[in-house]
Amino acid sequence: MKVFIAGKGVISAIGNNVAENFASLRNLQTGVSKITVLPTRYAETLPAAEVKLSNEELAQRCGLNSSEPRTAFLSSIAAKEAVADANIPDFKKWRTGFISANTVGAMDKTETIYKYYLEDDNTDKLIEEDPYDEGYVTELVANQLGINDHITTISTACSSSTNAMAYGARLIKANQLDIVVAGGCDAMSKFTLNGFNSLMILDTNPCTPYDENRKGLNLGEGAGYVVLVSEEVAATLAKKPTTILAGYANANDAFHQTASSPEGKGNFMAMQGALEMSGLSTKDIDYINLHGTGTSNNDLSEGIAIQRIFGDVPKVSSTKPYTGHTLGACAGIEAVYSILSIENGIIFPNLRFQTKMKELDFVPVTELLENMEVKHVMSNSFGFGGNCSSVIFSKAN
Image 1 (tube, helix red, strand yellow):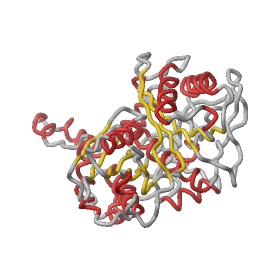
Image 2 (cartoon, one colour; image 1 turned 90 degrees about the vertical axis):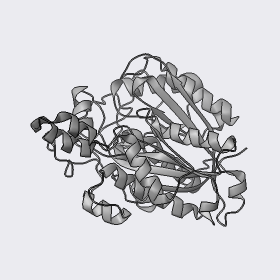
Image 3 (cartoon, helix red, strand yellow; image 1 turned 135 degrees about the vertical axis):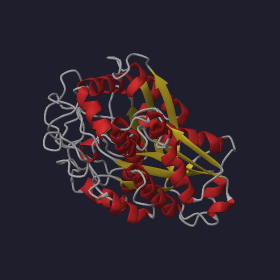
Image 4 (cartoon, helix red, strand yellow; image 1 turned 90 degrees about the horizontal axis):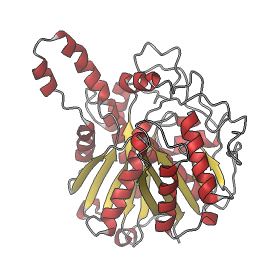
């Protein structure tokens, strides 16, 4: 059974919808800049890719109360766009699920509570009154969408959104659901910024993935969702889906809590598994959207695994120089970019690349490539805890 992609939605530092993101990608417009929205002592020293809208402005756009978590606003905006883009007649008559990923839930709200937690002797009460976990955001947005057949939150670090899409596809193939809105979201928070800073993997300049002189990543925020549908649902649509979710796989190299194995074992297994499910060969892949965070370990392990499995490496690039590393949202956002690549015959460049890595035989694309034949795109997402996932999007016949 084929699983079709009927709609897509995204919000990131380079745009508040799909059209704006696509325009920024084509115009080589980065979203990495000085931090202006998140209140932090590092605003002047650690660049990031923020959505340049306040919580109040985001809340107005999505119809939620402005007191809700920022992650929920981002999720709602992107998920609603995806559903609207799918334009499924009698949407509610189908068995529908919402599978949303994130890594830190509503941490921006928890951080506010924590300040009072330190000042209040009645600590147990404050802990009990903090409902802001990962699932809170998912349930809030599912209610907005009117989805109640199946609601699940996935949190597997930076591979979260890929696993959300894979789980959604499995439910459709198993005839448990007809439609799944799948993807992920994450907002900037002090917790993530301080945490990654403590690991000493943040670049104090805009990041340079796959460059020999890379110095780390830039954090970002946003959300990206796709609407997965069964063959039966796809047949009812006036706008025929352009792409299918052809293959996916999740693997774990069990090497280290925050680092990939030097030989990229988990990365290799994830890519190999996705290829096997899709029935494609390495020569069929036209473009790989790299995980490509800009850290020394990540880029090297992913690059070694790609060389091992592909040999003759296809066109590759990381889009994180545009959006920063959006953690649980990155695979959802990059799924939208992969689909745009197929639909428009475009391969987006790896911004700011200058020097080839000495350990690798290939370099990423550095100029916008247009009028390309792009039938099959692999997108990689490799997270903490060794959780590695790859997905393949293919042009629908």
